Amino acid sequence: MTVTEIHRAIETVFRMERARLIAGLARMMRDIDAAEELAQEAFVIALSEWQKTGIPRNPGAWLMTAAKRRALDSLRRRKMMALKHAEIGHTIKEGDETAVDAIEAAMDDDVGDELLSLIFTACHPVLSPQQRTALTLRLIGGLTTSEIARAFLSNEPAIAQRIVRAKKMLGAAGLSYEVPRGDERTARLASVLEVVYLIFNEGYAATMGEDLVRPALCAEAQRLGRILAGLMPDEPEVHGLLALMEIQASRLSARAGPQGEFVPLTQQDRARWDRLLIRRGLAALQRAEALGGENGAYALQAALAACHARARRSQDTDWPRIAALYDRLAEVMPSPVVGLNRAVAHSMAFGPETGLACLDGIAQAEILSQYAPLPAARGDFLFRAGRLDEARVAFERAAELTRNDREREFLLARALACRN
View 1 (spheres, rainbow, N blue to C red):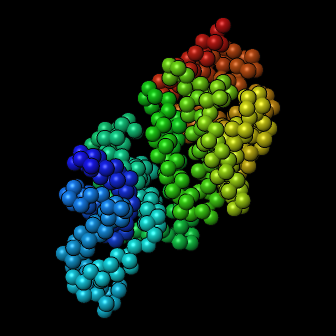
View 2 (cartoon, helix red, strand yellow):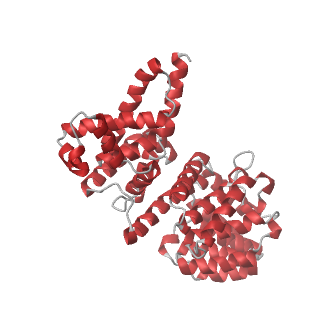
View 3 (cartoon, rainbow, N blue to C red):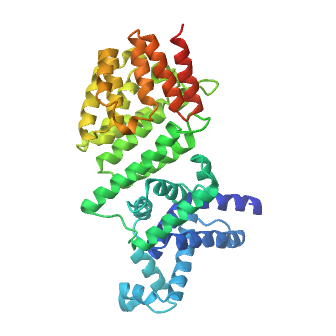
């Protein structure tokens, strides 16, 4: 193997193992900045050593061992070894390789648990949703600051500052970098799932810019969801969220036309839907329901997505079931946005006038005052009811509110159709 090939192999291994390295080291050091530096140091050591010895049989474990030995040196320098010595008692002798192994074993639970601990730490409620998302993408997703800035249409200094502040807040909070238990775990899990779904949604329906979707963000959120499902197999809402993301992601390639234009669900070419992702999503939904989570917010949304996934043609969609599921979701997760989606479902199941009546109940909500989907839905209901002049006004209002160029084009086209 040439030097160039070895370097490429090392970079690949590091990219794959980076999050796990940081997770293990952050738990050991309780300092994310230090964990990132130690992981990088292990990478530099590998660049030097593997050229001489070749790539080890288990490169991930090699990197973790190298990083933890450096971490132990750092702990000694910071006079923290006394605390670590107390954890494993009198068996430790300075410089004793067996003692080093004992320290590592004492600190090193299953690697997956460490990764989960890092996800929970990055999504701690002391951070704002924006900070949680940026830090999670940085630590778990391995995205660079510039990549995160591009993903969220922000500038690099702003994202860098957001991440720095998040790390400082976590450090000041004195966290243990462990998966919480009991009620706290339930509360923290909700935050984790919220951030993961936030990342997915930004990829599925970009809030700004020219691109309608950002598949890379969806893929990252799905990967995190699969990790969580693997590490927390008995949490129904984890499977519910995974099911929701898998099924929605199956439609990504069909959401945009040849020129990048928006294609509504009812007009999508269902042959372009990814059947493998649908099967994965349905299996995850079945798991969530088997665990008793059928009324969880994510499981209910996944069940809604499953209704569309099971319909081979748009006209086969079981709208009455979708309307009933939205009724349940509105009870579990009442919000104006859920109310809006419920109105859409009822309009499809029972007619546009029913949908308009549902909208009347939520139209005054302040949170929806600048929300483009509200006038867009009203425009659709009015259009189907034959009230074209009113529909045109609603579509034009929605086009004014949206910040996505592709959506604006779609809405203006619908407004124009009202004149014909």
